[in-house]
Length: 133
Image 1 (cartoon, rainbow, N blue to C red):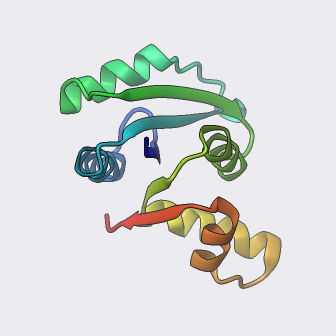
Image 2: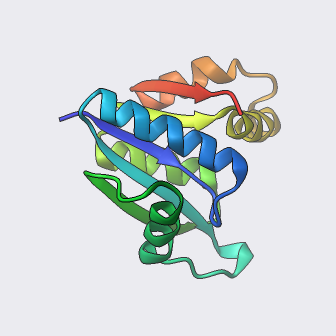
Image 3: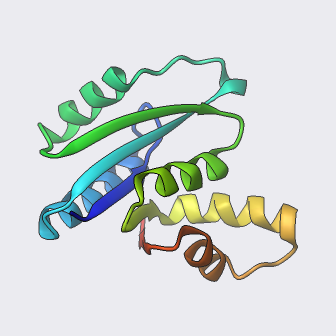
Protein backbone atom coordinates (compact mmCIF):
# COMPACT_ATOMS: atom_id res chain seq x y z
CA UNK A 1 0.00 0.00 0.00
CA UNK A 2 1.18 3.51 -0.77
CA UNK A 3 1.96 5.76 2.20
CA UNK A 4 1.69 9.55 2.12
CA UNK A 5 3.28 11.65 4.88
CA UNK A 6 2.28 15.27 5.44
CA UNK A 7 4.00 17.41 8.08
CA UNK A 8 1.77 20.14 9.53
CA UNK A 9 1.89 22.85 12.17
CA UNK A 10 -0.30 22.74 15.25
CA UNK A 11 -2.61 24.46 15.61
CA UNK A 12 -3.30 24.21 11.91
CA UNK A 13 -2.34 27.32 10.00
CA UNK A 14 -3.91 28.37 6.71
CA UNK A 15 -0.84 26.95 4.94
CA UNK A 16 -1.07 23.67 6.86
CA UNK A 17 -4.75 23.37 5.96
CA UNK A 18 -3.99 23.82 2.25
CA UNK A 19 -1.14 21.32 2.40
CA UNK A 20 -3.25 18.85 4.36
CA UNK A 21 -6.17 19.18 1.90
CA UNK A 22 -3.79 18.36 -0.98
CA UNK A 23 -2.38 15.36 0.93
CA UNK A 24 -5.86 14.04 1.78
CA UNK A 25 -6.91 14.33 -1.87
CA UNK A 26 -3.68 12.68 -3.07
CA UNK A 27 -4.07 9.80 -0.61
CA UNK A 28 -7.68 9.28 -1.73
CA UNK A 29 -6.70 9.38 -5.43
CA UNK A 30 -3.95 6.81 -4.88
CA UNK A 31 -5.88 4.66 -2.41
CA UNK A 32 -3.06 5.32 0.06
CA UNK A 33 -2.69 5.52 3.80
CA UNK A 34 -1.92 8.95 5.23
CA UNK A 35 0.33 9.96 8.10
CA UNK A 36 -0.26 13.44 9.50
CA UNK A 37 2.92 14.50 11.31
CA UNK A 38 3.46 17.38 13.70
CA UNK A 39 6.89 18.10 15.13
CA UNK A 40 6.49 19.50 18.63
CA UNK A 41 9.63 21.53 19.25
CA UNK A 42 11.25 21.17 22.69
CA UNK A 43 12.20 24.83 22.66
CA UNK A 44 8.51 25.84 22.39
CA UNK A 45 7.76 23.98 25.64
CA UNK A 46 4.40 22.84 24.34
CA UNK A 47 2.86 19.40 24.76
CA UNK A 48 0.76 18.51 21.74
CA UNK A 49 -0.65 14.97 21.72
CA UNK A 50 -1.68 12.83 18.79
CA UNK A 51 -5.29 13.06 19.99
CA UNK A 52 -5.06 16.90 19.91
CA UNK A 53 -3.80 16.68 16.35
CA UNK A 54 -6.46 14.15 15.33
CA UNK A 55 -9.30 16.20 16.83
CA UNK A 56 -8.11 19.35 15.09
CA UNK A 57 -7.75 17.66 11.71
CA UNK A 58 -11.14 15.96 12.00
CA UNK A 59 -12.80 19.26 12.96
CA UNK A 60 -11.36 20.83 9.82
CA UNK A 61 -11.80 17.92 7.37
CA UNK A 62 -14.06 15.32 8.97
CA UNK A 63 -12.96 11.74 9.53
CA UNK A 64 -10.11 10.82 7.20
CA UNK A 65 -9.93 7.09 6.47
CA UNK A 66 -6.64 5.20 6.84
CA UNK A 67 -4.97 8.07 8.65
CA UNK A 68 -2.33 7.86 11.34
CA UNK A 69 -1.61 10.88 13.54
CA UNK A 70 1.93 11.28 14.83
CA UNK A 71 3.49 13.88 17.11
CA UNK A 72 7.25 13.79 17.54
CA UNK A 73 9.19 15.95 20.00
CA UNK A 74 12.45 17.30 18.69
CA UNK A 75 14.78 20.26 18.39
CA UNK A 76 14.98 20.02 14.57
CA UNK A 77 11.90 19.85 12.38
CA UNK A 78 13.69 18.87 9.17
CA UNK A 79 15.60 15.96 10.68
CA UNK A 80 12.48 14.66 12.44
CA UNK A 81 10.50 14.75 9.21
CA UNK A 82 13.25 12.81 7.41
CA UNK A 83 13.33 10.27 10.27
CA UNK A 84 9.56 9.78 10.17
CA UNK A 85 9.54 9.41 6.40
CA UNK A 86 12.25 6.74 6.65
CA UNK A 87 10.46 4.94 9.52
CA UNK A 88 7.21 4.90 7.54
CA UNK A 89 9.01 3.91 4.33
CA UNK A 90 6.83 6.60 2.77
CA UNK A 91 6.18 6.72 -0.95
CA UNK A 92 5.12 10.37 -1.06
CA UNK A 93 5.78 13.42 1.11
CA UNK A 94 3.51 16.44 0.71
CA UNK A 95 4.85 19.77 1.89
CA UNK A 96 3.70 23.34 1.40
CA UNK A 97 5.80 25.85 -0.51
CA UNK A 98 6.12 27.84 2.74
CA UNK A 99 7.78 24.79 4.30
CA UNK A 100 10.19 24.51 1.38
CA UNK A 101 11.17 28.12 2.08
CA UNK A 102 11.90 27.26 5.73
CA UNK A 103 13.93 24.22 4.65
CA UNK A 104 15.78 26.36 2.09
CA UNK A 105 16.71 28.87 4.80
CA UNK A 106 17.96 26.13 7.12
CA UNK A 107 19.90 24.41 4.36
CA UNK A 108 21.50 27.65 3.22
CA UNK A 109 22.84 28.18 6.72
CA UNK A 110 24.23 24.62 6.78
CA UNK A 111 25.35 24.04 3.20
CA UNK A 112 25.69 27.37 1.47
CA UNK A 113 23.42 27.58 -1.60
CA UNK A 114 22.14 24.04 -2.26
CA UNK A 115 19.60 23.05 -4.88
CA UNK A 116 16.85 22.42 -2.31
CA UNK A 117 14.51 20.42 -4.52
CA UNK A 118 17.34 18.06 -5.55
CA UNK A 119 18.56 17.79 -1.97
CA UNK A 120 15.12 16.90 -0.61
CA UNK A 121 14.46 14.41 -3.38
CA UNK A 122 17.87 12.81 -2.75
CA UNK A 123 17.40 12.69 1.03
CA UNK A 124 13.78 11.58 1.02
CA UNK A 125 14.18 8.79 -1.57
CA UNK A 126 10.50 9.13 -2.43
CA UNK A 127 8.17 11.37 -4.37
CA UNK A 128 8.03 14.95 -3.10
CA UNK A 129 4.90 16.98 -3.78
CA UNK A 130 5.09 20.70 -3.12
CA UNK A 131 1.76 22.46 -2.66
CA UNK A 132 1.64 26.15 -3.58
CA UNK A 133 0.31 28.01 -0.53
